[in-house]
Amino acid sequence: MSWHHRHFSLLHCLSLAAVVVISNAFVSLPTTKKAPCVRNSEFSSKFKISMVRNIDLPECLIFYGREALFDFADDGIGATIKAGAEKILKEASDIGTPCILLSEGDISSVELVQKMIGGSSIQNLIKALSTLEVGNDESSIYNQSPSPLALLDALDDITIEPRGFGGSSGFGTKLADPPRSPLPKHCVVFTSGVKGRDRCIAARQAGMRVIFIEKNFGDCDADDVVDGVITSFEEIYFIDDIATPGSFWLNPPSPRDENGDRIDPYIIAEQIKRNRKRNNNNSNEAETEIDGNLSTKEIDESEMARILADLDTL
Image 1 (spheres, one colour):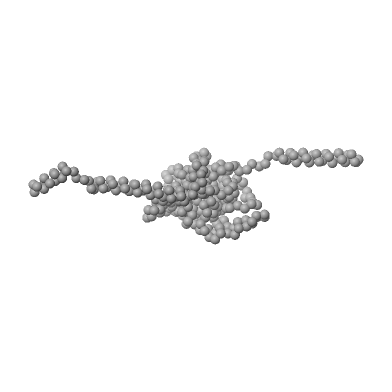
Image 2 (cartoon, rainbow, N blue to C red):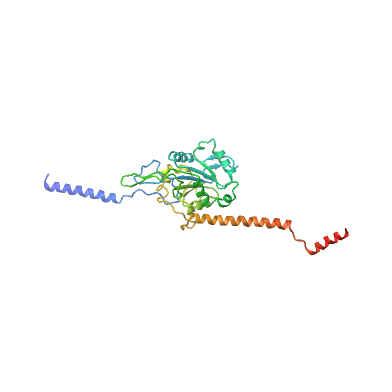
């Protein structure tokens, strides 16, 4: 082959390579996960992926309200565990992430939940707590749900051994913290039901991530205050999906109000305390005033004269 032919062949090969490189530059890359508050089923990977970057797994999962974990019968008594919930609870248990079922009501509601859980496959996987404590007026006033204080107080009943951070190639490492309560920014709240929006706002105010579970597709009325919406726990294939970063969010949250403004959750909690205590006192004063009017009604002059006249006849 002559020099000209070899030269032409070489140029031809280089031209083909350039076309391949340029064409590859315009190939569409895989789309990323949807923004927060989206249905995640069509985007989550069904295969567990080992990430090269560091991630923070949840330190606590909170099921806020019984409807977050159970599907109730029409009579409101019979209940079954939501599809996919047991798998999430088992994986959380395997990695040392505690789970809480935070029911709204007094200790009797907790006892009911414990009966529902007792004997079931999840009885050792979740802890039942109540937002109200019987015999403690302060708690019944302050922790009445929905409230960020109820969520923050629930964490005080839990102690974890934090995991170390890092270890991937090119990243630093951080030794594990000593035993402590879970940090709100590493907690994920699941909620549902008629109080779902208020519960979402409370979780947002507490500085936690929150996922709304729809009974039927499109039922969510809290799109503006949640981080994700699902219709079934089966849409969360692994705990990694709700890690930071994960399938629903990239960064840790900061406490925000319903309008998205940053807040201090403890200041909000104090405001809730004052408002509820004031309302409770006003209610008690009104009852006392009514009782007092009934028992200490003033006697007018004509009535007094009649009574004295009756006494004179004696």
